[in-house]
View (spheres, chains in turn brown, blue, green, red):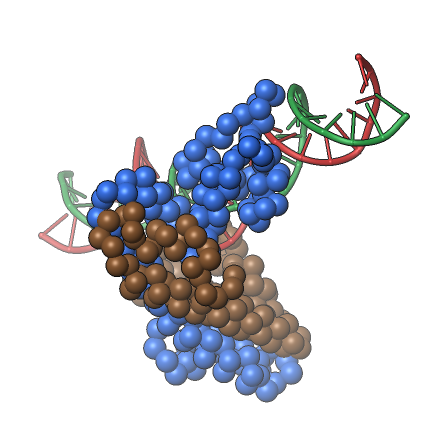
Length: 139
Length: 139
DNA sequence: CTCATTCCTACAGTTACTGGAGAAATGGGG
DNA sequence: CCCCATTTCTCCAGTAACTGTAGGAATGAG
């Protein structure tokens, strides 16, 4: 059974070394097996769990939410309503963020393209930020 | 000249009191004038600056970027290229974030709606997170 | 056996706040 | 003028999710 060092694991999953140790500390990863000289060694199972964690983080789940899911998956007989709930909450959250960012995009587009003066005193960027009235949208 | 207490300023701008003090500490706000008893007092000018800061934060600018803009606006004779640059950088950033979130949204939609089993062991959410192959998109 | 590379632990720093403790100032009512 | 509730003061700690550093030990190829 080919055990990986933390560096190998890091390269294979794209998760940085201190982050892997941090996940262990946060009890997302189980305490790793150790070599004679006290270095961490990882098996395929642990690589898979780290990929799970990474993927979930990329989806924006918090450490706490991920820990919930991991605990959940340790009890396969439980109903999966909670897992559904976590995913649904995440989706709502992401949609909210997108909406907000769209508004910002619009405003920044207007700001960044309309600067006519070449001196700060005429600069649209500065004026737009200083004077909220120049915004068309609400926020 | 109606000077505001920090609480008044907070209510008028919607910026929390500790945050106002934090902005002073971060040198976004100038050190406030003080009353006899050492309490902060603010004028209209300072209220406007705080609104500027709030607005810029809502647009996603970092504290550092905002400080740059404030420094810039203190020197109206300088060309406004830098202010343009900051706004343009921000725009690129926001667009990147939107793109990423769109992908997450798609994936979460698929995950959150396709759970067929009623036990965790059949739960699509868990399986999708555990098994990256279920993703259609790359990331 | 040597030595570069990797790993260990422990701790500090990051960003942008937020909250609490304990003490002092403020301002309206009696 | 005093009382007292409310507000403010400073300082410090905590948040999320890492990232980086220092000083020292283990690993493994030559």
